[in-house]
Length: 170
Image 1 (cartoon, rainbow, N blue to C red):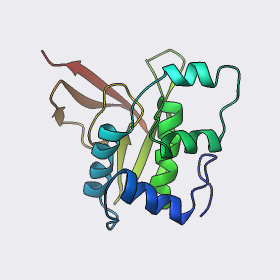
Image 2 (image 1 turned 90 degrees about the horizontal axis):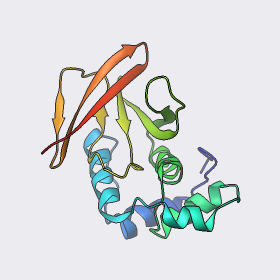
Image 3 (image 1 turned 30 degrees about the horizontal axis):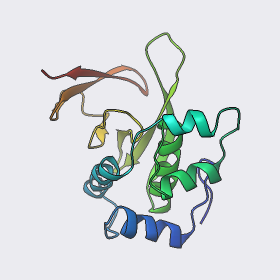
Image 4 (image 1 turned 135 degrees about the vertical axis):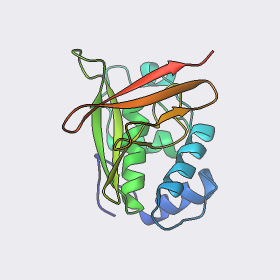
């Protein structure tokens, strides 16, 4: 398969990750299938940064390191999990791009995924300490998403620029 985000996944790696790690069967391209993947990743692949800072301190990350850590369910931070999951979704036939995220007027220090499907754009983040559990439609600005411990809403701030406001529910 072709490389995406510096990660090349073989067909057997894609199938093994899907069935053996995520315990999912391949389905046709749909947002429901993506949301199933998001939930399974949140349940199985940990967000963690302790091993990343000790193991890779001073060592440049590369696609093979990232691939190994996710395939072995070690997890990581946004710069590990999101490039791998973007390459994985791309291998399944999805149109995905990595995007830089951050607070307004500050350095963009977070990496997430933009998925384009059926003329709609979705924000996906597998590498956040507080998982989203579903793709967030960026074209749907009036919906407030509510989950067990937080809610969020999307705002347009310009052409292809969005703000996702997060609220911790009490």
